[in-house]
Image 1: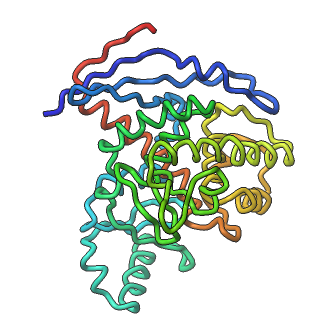
Image 2: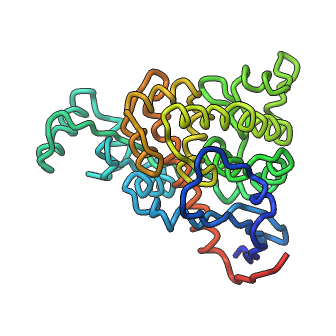
Length: 320
């Protein structure tokens, strides 16, 4: 049995130095805290964000859906309504894989009739991804990258979110050529000073890729997020969860795709509703994977909290 202890080390001094742009929300948001997790005689710093619960992100059906997927084996599949991620059925993945295309269509049609849903309702089949989301193994990686992001004067919340979504616990290469824990595309890595050639790929180096990701967020993603919100007259606070999620969308899908999705959805006000509107909006390169990105960020953050709570033996408040 792993012996876990959590030590709340107070509000990070870094957070007081984060600049805010635009008009601040009238009610200040609760600051992030850092938690030191004691695991197998090693201390790991992770970021704790209580606003995820205070703003009730954890109650949304999309987030509940992804949390369920993250704890399911790949031998199990869920069939859900695309718009809300309401689960209609769970079944062995092998059964669905063995179906012909027409059989799959009939299967979905039968559920539409059973639940009296309109025939145009889109349904998705999603396999369990417990093997992919190695959240426990991500702890020491988060620890290293929180420090790097702080040194780069970038909110470490982004480091944790990206590491939990993109390549939790292991460095991977995607089918579109993104490499490493931060899943940097070649052109992004090179633009941030990394070597990527036939002899060397510095995206595989955790410290260098974290530095490049932090630089990319600071110099590209955050300025682009500020500009698109200002252009639409949307008030914001950079410590708001919805602002952070929007910046994550820019990191994943690119500023032009996110700005186009905002225009298409005709969003004129900030807040959680802005992010939820993006979940239902497609625009050029902003499609299903992009819509899911902030959902996965929220789900993995909450699953990290659940892991810590479940395996924690002692909570010990400590003053810096």
